[in-house]
Length: 167
Image 1 (cartoon, helix red, strand yellow):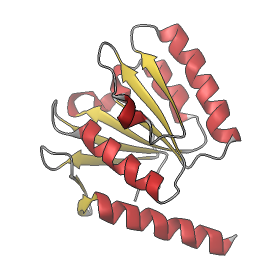
Image 2 (spheres, one colour):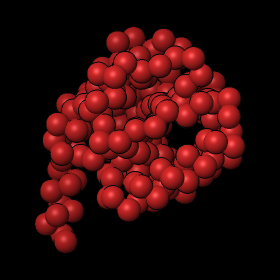
Image 3 (cartoon, helix red, strand yellow):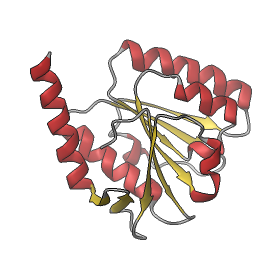
Image 4 (tube, rainbow, N blue to C red):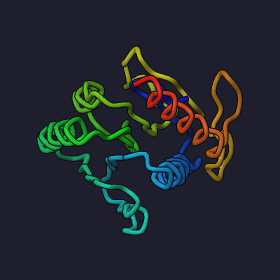
């Protein structure tokens, strides 16, 4: 799970997408998975306690595309240079298509949230789609069935162990 370039968690407004993403990120951090967080904000700000679990993060102002493109270039350099496992992007669909395409080119896997209505903005062929299954952000649904955060963590840890053995 989450082995594609873009792993998209979609849902309706107030469906728990951000909560799911933050809960998943906290659990991944607890098992040593290195995450970089990008928050796409307009007027909403994240509580510091939510961002403290990330080794590094940036908040993008969705009203300034030029600065966002420059910031994404910096994020690309940092994440690839410092060996991050995942780029976590909340509300990627608030960004321009140019920004989304640049994020797609970053050479690490992405876990992103997106409104159901805006899925068409992500054109990366190497994508998997998951839908929030409940209103509290604890389960996601894919073609393979319903997954919990715990199940996702186990799969990612298993994948990391297999990769270490193979190297």
